[in-house]
Image 1: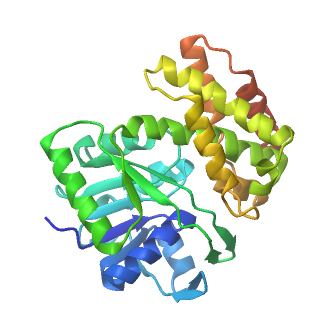
Image 2 (image 1 turned 45 degrees about the horizontal axis):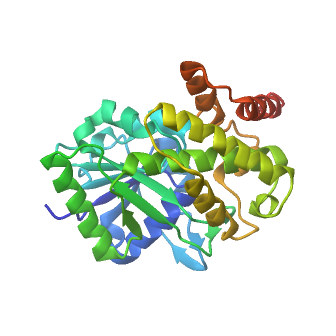
Length: 306
């Protein structure tokens, strides 16, 4: 089955970057942002500038009966995942394929429990450097999606083939991963270091691109994830750390991750997804994680003042 209809839940940076690309290639009628009534009322009639190009996106309420999506993309934050799952229930059929662009290592499992794990492919979004201003967004690097399957079943292979076909047809940037779980954990390691440290230090990427305490804390936090990955039978090496540090060094110095935006807007962050998960896994395996414990406590202290 060729994928024609794409639904996206989440109008953050990732949703807008990839949603605008898909709309350009597939047409407005085939790419739809699904949301609750409150957001629909807020966003209806709002035009957005993405890298200077004006977009009038196709918006729809999840409460309304609508044509099921061939491909459903989750592009919300982890704190909004459960709500998003309820929002898009009317857009999921037996043939719908689902991918998640969320940070962390748990969203695919949660989505699979809601809609069936056979529908879910594993994806990791990385390498983008968005700068947001109101409803508008600019970026110098679109980034890409790493995609793969967790089980070598015929159903998963077929779904992967269908998604790769639409990616190729639309010029959607991706890398096919042989070991997608290793890549998922590697991205988790990156987020644990980068997102949290920039929230604590109230900085842009520039803050961790130069030598100093922030960069040292970032790398130390990442190394604690490497120890835990080994306990979970996931192989991450110093080479992976070096790759991701180099990736961060290549981004727009003025850019920042979503967690930093949360701090600026005094919104509860994804700290439980990052250092919270590290602490949980550390206790499970008896592995000390003092850097992430410090990070966790400092972010909780920051958020206690909201």
